[in-house]
Length: 179
Ligand SMILES: N[C@@H](CCC(=O)N[C@@H](CS)C(=O)NCC(=O)O)C(=O)O
Image (cartoon, rainbow, N blue to C red; front, top):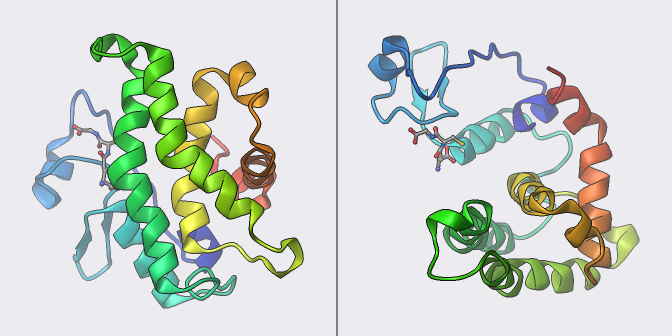
């Protein structure tokens, strides 16, 4: 989406993570996706590096300037370091039997979803603009919602639900998710 919003042409190559192609491992031995190779051979090894690189080329929607750097980083770090591990435990609860699925979900709610609800509620609607943080975290909130969509839809999370629905309906998301 960052490449899309920046208007940068790119080629995507899908790989099987069960049978990682040697061509991938040759240019990026860590073997995770996404990675991006620039025309000069430089490798961007993290999705966030790809997003930041794209927006450094061109940021017409103001994703880097919509909020303070500290606030943008706060949400991305909280998502990556705290929410993502809890999300994975909720998604794959049978691999983490120390807690029930509902307990894993509760931990993710307290650590991230409710704080996000409060932060979104505190934004005065008309003044708000999307930032890099929104684009970086909404795919994980989408995953969280999708584990049990009926449950998620009935939670007292009006701001998160509306925010997620806006991103899912956005032209940018619809365009990049086209198979
Ligand atoms: N922090 C990395 C995470 C990359 C990552 O874990 N990618 C997963 C797919 S979403 C992967 O490639 N897993 C395959 C593996 O670890 O072998 C990033 O943001 O790029």
